[in-house]
Length: 248
Image (tube, rainbow, N blue to C red; front, side, top):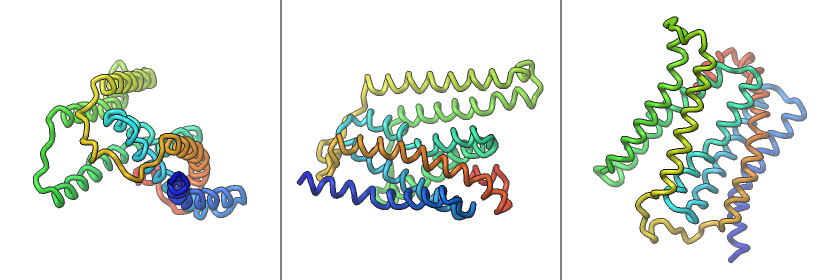
């Protein structure tokens, strides 16, 4: 039984391991920028998929509230690493457009697809009012933190001369809200799901899920570095703007 469980873990990781290996070989052999870019993008997507699977299995050993926090934090590791390495490479426009694209895709595309799929399968969907209100408030806060420094600069307000300091303050506020919200969710918890709904027969063990997440986190860091390294030359070769590449 244990061997079969680890066999399924390895089967889930196998495509990602292969794609990461191909991306590494192309990166260190200095293949063409387009080939490197495509290989790194595919490897990064495969690592993100495995992270999602591992997080899903880890949720079987945690409370619903803790599962949601882990999914929101760990699930964005590849995107976080890409932004960090892009900032180090001076691709500020790519990072800005990527943040906007992430908000739009989650708030419009993902949410819209969830509504369509849920309505198609379950009919009329009913939601508790507290959680959507909280999410809407957090979204408004995040957008405000992105907009305020730019507005201060573009409208020539007195605070516009301190745009960088204002941006740092907004970032600190967002981090503080995240910490407080995380503590509140873990303390209060959420309404538990029925055991038969939450449990999975073929769930990974806790150690396997954590080990896969750790390995994927390290892999995501390396692949993100290769991806950003190939991004600049690929943008020049394809003739697209940094804003478009980041948004997409």
